[in-house]
Structures are given as C-alpha cells and as structure tokens.
Image (cartoon, rainbow, N blue to C red; front, side):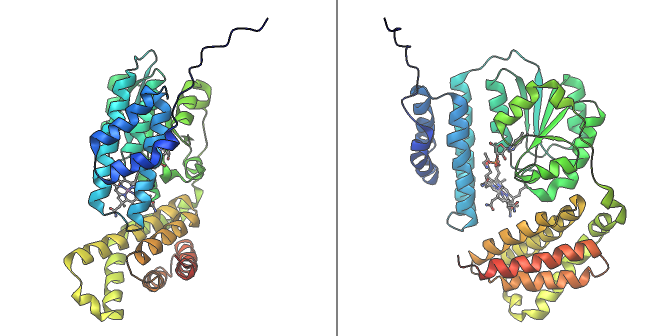
Length: 353
Ligand code: B12
C-alpha cells in the first residue's frame, strides 16, 4: 500500500520569473503594478521572506547598476526606491507577523541614507517572530544609545552601505557595545565577505537570513571579536581628516591649472566635482582607517566607471590621484594606497566598456 500523497503547498510562481515584470513597473514608476506583482507571488504561495529577498532586493540592486551606467536618472532611481519601500510595506501587511521574541532595533549608521537594505533585514526579522523597531536612515550615535537603554533592546542591527562611513560606523558600534547591547552589522560597506567588520571587532551577517540566524544564537551574538586597529598609531587617519578641506581645495586648484576649460563648468558640474573629490578623500581615509588599500582601489574602479559612462575619460581620475599622491608625500600608507589607486584607474580606463 502506498502512503497518500502529501498535500502540496509548493508555490505556483517563482520570484525570479517575475523580476523582469517588476523592474518594468519600477521603470514606469507604476506603484500599484509593482505591488500587484509582489502580492501576486504571495497569493501563489511564495513566502513573504522570499518575495522580499528574491524580488525586491535584486530589483533594487539592478536599479543601482542602471543609475551607475547612466541609463537611469537620479529621479528614476528615487521613484523606484520609493515604490520598493511601498512594496515592502504591502508585503509585511499581507504577512501580518505577530512578535513572540525580544526587541531588535535596526538602524542606519550616522550619515547613511541607504535605508531600504536594513528595512529588508528588519522585515525578515519581524517575519521570524522578533519585535522589531526600525529607526531608518542616519541615526546619531548618542540618540541610538539612549533609545536602546530606554527600550531594553535584546540586540541592535546596524547598516552601512558606503565603506567611506566605516570610521563613523566604528564609533557607533563602540557606543552600543559599551552599553552592553550585542551588535550585528551588515551592508555593502563592510566588504563582500565582511572583512572590515572583523577589523572593527563586530559580528557581521551577509544578508537578512544570516542576521536572523545570528541573533537567534545568543553565544555567537555575544562572542567577543578583537579589534585590529594598531596601525592607527601612525596618526595618518587623523591627519587626513584634519587636512580634508585643504586637500579638496588643492585638487581643485590643480584641476583649474591643468584644464583651463573648467572655468565654463556649470554650478552643477562644480558641485559634482567637489563632492567627487570629497568622496575620494573620505574613501582614502576609510581605507587608511581599516588599513586595506582594496577599499580605496574598489572605489577608484567604481569612480572611473561612473565618469566614463558620463563621457569623462579615466585620465581625469589618474591626474587627480597623481596630484593627491604628491600632496600626501609625507603619508607613507596613504601615499601607497593612492599609488595603487593610480594603477587601478589606468587599468580600469583601458578596459573597453
Ligand atoms: C537606492 C540607493 C540609494 C538611495 C537610498 C534610499 C533608500 N531609502 O535606501 C539614495 C538616493 C539615498 C542613495 C544615495 C547615495 N548612494 Co546609493 N544606492 C542605492 C541603490 C540603488 C540600492 C540600494 C539597495 O537598496 N540595494 C539592494 C539591497 C537589498 O542590497 P544590499 O545593499 O547589498 O543589501 C543586502 C546585503 O548587503 C545585506 N545588508 C544590507 N544592509 C544590511 C544591514 C544589516 C544589519 C545586515 C545584517 C545585512 C545587511 O542584506 C541585504 C539583503 O540581502 C544602490 C545600488 C545597489 N546595487 O545596491 C546604490 C549605491 C549603494 N549607492 C551608491 C552611491 C555612490 C550613493 C551616493 C554616494 C550617491 C551620491 N553621489 O550622492 C549617495 C550616498 C548617500 C549616503 N550618504 O548614504 C553606490 C555605492 C558605490 C560605492 N563605491 O560604495 C551604489 C552601489 C550605486 C552604484 N552602483 O554605484 N542611494
């Protein structure tokens, strides 16, 4: 006699098959259409967690790639992100989870505006029974710590999408650790394999399910990871931060001397140039902070790709880095990182795109 067949609860749809349709709705800023695609998957039996992680998350990553390749404007990217936030809210409302576990506070580091990735983490934790408070973008350290005290948090999950924010992230992590609340961090800012989280002595999770597994394991969560920042004794990081304004000004003066036509720049072009130079110095300072040139060279490769997709040759980055290298001749570590950045810019500029 054969056992009766188990009733099948397998979903009748796949998030990956709906991705192209979902992206098309984002491209058209079609909020209701995008929500329909997501709730259609839920109706077909796909668990809410999979819709968040296999539909909304990859779609947002693709939005970023399209913006970086100059295929989508900033306005299109903003509209898509707003719709994704609405879709996340619709998915959670549909699933309607009830908390049975302790409180986890999820927040972005000070100065960090990428709130959607940690929002996805927050919703996955909520779906797994935690009581979650999501504090959103750019939370100042002092406010976060007093919030944790007042609300008796079991753990705090902190997000960082931009590696240039790592020194600030470290201050925030330390502030939470001092108040004895276990911290888990995540986001692209900590490096693909979380290597910079290890440097800062904090538990890291690669994604939302990883964060959920970590907070469920109290021993792993409370394991002490030693920090490894002895290189800061050379004071290069602190000096770079102090000289930030002067470095940007001298790079601008160098640009004016080398490329006289920049006098015709519009104010928007000047703003973009100044903020690019600021990012370059900030990424360099963060690389020096964690003592890893890859943090800076990855940024240089990204910067060259961004500029070339907007018609600016890689040589512009090479010349600016050449100037920085000269200005930082008394900084052995930073100077070496910039030299590696020059090599990266030259190589990135010669690769056909
Ligand atoms: C939307 C977006 C924005 C929005 C954010 C709005 C919002 N509400 O989130 C806005 C417009 C504010 C923005 C601003 C900027 N952005 Co932006 N942005 C993005 C974009 C398109 C999507 C982010 C996203 O939602 N990704 C999808 C998520 C799901 O993927 P994920 O981040 O990898 O997250 C997963 C894991 O990392 C992990 N995870 C993430 N967070 C956390 C947290 C915890 C605690 C844990 C455990 C795990 C975890 O789990 C997630 C799910 O599995 C990305 C592109 C991209 N490809 O991601 C760029 C991107 C991150 N931005 C970028 C840049 C450069 C900027 C700006 C500097 C642009 C500018 N010139 O102004 C500013 C900086 C603002 C700031 N100070 O924070 C770059 C960063 C490049 C680099 N070299 O570091 C990217 C990669 C775009 C690109 N391709 O160039 N951005």
